[in-house]
Structure formats: structure tokens, C-alpha cells
Length: 321
Image (cartoon, rainbow, N blue to C red):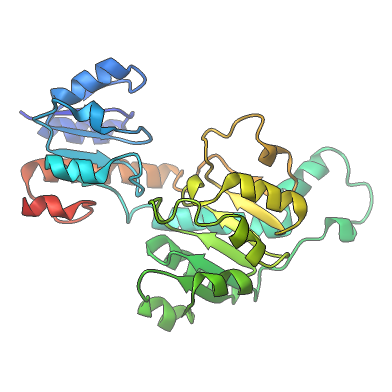
């Protein structure tokens, strides 16, 4: 029976599914040496939220497949995995709707100052009818600019256009005719999107091309009344530049589910800013979605080890080797 390493806790039924097909060795990734030793003696691996470096795979000659319980795969050196002939699988479909819900919760919370004003009420500050000092911004009918109109971006566009009558602008490597027809989305250059959007939503993977995609110059190009929403990866935004822009009123507010360093350090200026909604990377964090992701990742791994996986493959070039 083939052996796999699991470096994340799995639901009992998912673990049971795996054990029907492979021998499962569960490891604590914080025990680095034991983790690396387990990988070197395994045919496959499953987990999330841990960086797997090329050095960790030296001597792992049996390793044929890794399956991440996430849509993002920036914890892996994909080129290195491909050179080694190791298939990398991910879970791009099952978290689309829950993540899009999180994005829209950030839009609404940031625009209507939900977190700030809820804390204000709990602190006993609501002593009379509210006035302009507590007013927020409308979402209905505004312009949303989506940077990366893939699965999640498309789900955000659907909510924006059909639910909130918003004008949808987007940038993407290729056109999205479905979104253009169904939601009236219009593809524009990033500069135009930044200049015209009331809400700028990042839905791109973290790559060399997208690292610090939004920096000081891009923030200055946005409307002063604009709100930045990031539920993709923290490093797609230059966090220092964002902090400065929020302090100076360059942009109005930010709704963030991801950060350069996670968990967010206790001394981060973002934590003390009333115009920031900060969430603990909860994009897909519902009971239903996280279970579906774990099961999907397990199925991906079993199929990859059997040589039958045809979808959810990050480095499809391996199949041609």
C-alpha cells in the first residue's frame, strides 16, 4: 500500500477515505526534521498553510503527488515540483461561493462601517440619534473593479451586478465573455480600473507578476473615496504603502482578509485604524466548505497516485513527462 503524509488535521470521514486507499502518516509540520523525514519516505502528501521548499524534498525519490487543501499554491515551488515529476493538485472549485461571500462581507462592512460602529455601540457611545460622523457609503449602484476575474472574481461580479446593481469593471489575462454577457462586465486596463472604481477587489494568485501589484502609485491612482478589498494573498499589496495611504486619506478604507504576515502582528498599525476591517483569513472558513475542500484534496491525491487525476492539477506539464 502506498504511503502518504498528512500535515494538517483532517475530518474523520476524510481520513477514513484516505485510509481505504493508502497508509496515512500524520505529522506535525512544526517538527521540521520529522516532517522532512516523513516526506522522504512517502509517495504523496496532503495539507495546507505550510511552505514546502525544494530542500525539504531532497531525497524524496518516491514522492509522486502533493495535494494542497486550498486554491492558492504559493507555498510550493511549482517549477521545482515539475522538474521532480511531482504532481501538485489544489481545490479551486469548492471554495468559490464561500470566498465570494467573504469578499462581499468586506465590501459591506467597510462601506457601512459595520465593525467600527458595532464596537462604538458596545462601548456605550450611542447616546443620541446618529449624525454625519457615523455615516457610511452606499454600495448599491457603485462601480466595482475586480482584478482577476476567475472563478471567485466571477462569483463576486455576480453578487455585485445582480444583487447590488453595480457596474463591473475587470482586468484579467484573458477576456471573460460569460461575465460580460451575464453581468455587463467590461474589461479595462488596470489604470482605468483604479481610476474609475469605488471598490477595488483583488482576486489574483500570488506570483512574481502579482507581488505588490498594488503599491503606492496604484493607491494614488484610486479615488479618495475608494475602498480596497483584498481576499487573495497579502503580498499582492504593498502593506507599508497601504498603511500610509490609509493614514493620509489617499483612499477611504480597506477590507482585508489577508496580510503580509499571518497571524497579523499585534503591533500592526492596521489594527488601530478605524477605516480598516481586518479578518483572520476566513475566505473559505465555513464548516461546509472546509470539509468539502479536505475531501476534494483527498480525492485529488488518491487519483494522482493512481495516475487517473485529470482536473485540479497545477502543473499539468508533469503528465507529459
